[in-house]
Amino acid sequence: MPITASLRNSDLVGRDAEVAVLDRVLAGGSRVAHLHGPGGIGKSVLLHHFARQARLAGREVVHVDARADDDQRRVEEAAALACVQAGAVLLVDGVERCRQLEPRLRATVLPRLAEGGVVVLAGRTAPDPEWTLDPGWARLFTALVVRPLDAAASDALLAARGLAPHRRGAVLAFAGGNPLVLALAASTASWEPTGDVLTTLVDRLVGEVPSPVHRRGLDVLALARVTRESVLRVVLGDDDAATVFSWLRRQPYVEAAPDGLVPHDAVRATLDADLRWRDPGRHEDLRAVVAVRHTATARDPLPRNAFEDGVLEALRTWRVPREFETSALLRSHLVPPDSADPVSDLRAAITTAVEALRTDPAGVKAHDAVTATYLAASGTHRATARRLGVPYGTYRRHLALARERLVEHLLTR
Image (cartoon, rainbow, N blue to C red; front, side, top):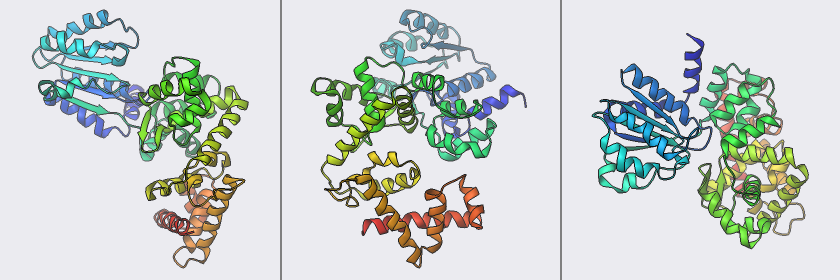
């Protein structure tokens, strides 16, 4: 297989569902499709795949990159070329750079699109609501959210890029399923996200930041478990907190969780590493401020799913104690309200629960699995199974049981 084809195939690892949607669009399932997701998530790769498939079908392709030229008039002029040939395909990347482009396309270009023509837009922000509010456009429109890759697809992408298995663990933990981060890590001699690498990642994942105040808001977003206006107010003051919170909640790499705003994993890891690299002192000071704020929050009972997620995150980050400073479990019954050292008390509670598995008839082997995997972690899960001397499937069952029993021990503590 030619090198270029091999790389293209690796770029599409884990994208079977998205490719299937685009194939249906090309076959006449929609006249307009809109791909959206945060920077580095793979929108442009999917757009290029669509272009290749269209050309193989003998269709004319007009590709407009608004990221390189966001002059709306010139974008519209280029788009007009798709109105003169039947079956033409118009692709517009970076559509969010031209704020009024979508309404203008509906008003001037799409009504003149040649017979059988298709338009595919790609951008960081969600599509203009008018596409679905207008019944006429809704029948012709398909929206496609491009999400992070799951763990299996992420590992497969790194394998396809030639990254050795023993180097993948740190990359997978940092990348959070973001294909850009995964590809960048696979291309470096050693994965050390500092300097130029972090500059590239911040530019591509976050994009333009309006002001230094907004940048400080991003720092809070990276270090806080969840971000609300009250957390921002402690750092930014009353005047700026509301403005920055409103800006953050509109960013494509931020999700609105029940407790507040949560960034995508790759963005959190990148912003955290960037602040630690450029200003270590501020990083530690801000982490302490955020930790105090979360500890001081009223200790409402955590929902069971949030508690379970907190336990799993605590295990995953066991060897990095500072990560516990923003754990959701700090607000749970595991930490006394008057604790002088909440992090130490939380870690002690988890350690006690892990040790309790030794005397649990259903959890003896589970204890060995969870200890070897998290508390004394080294290498992949398959390597851990080999060290324990059990088949991989058996190890996975022991580990699942360990998590289940550990949560039960901690809930009843």
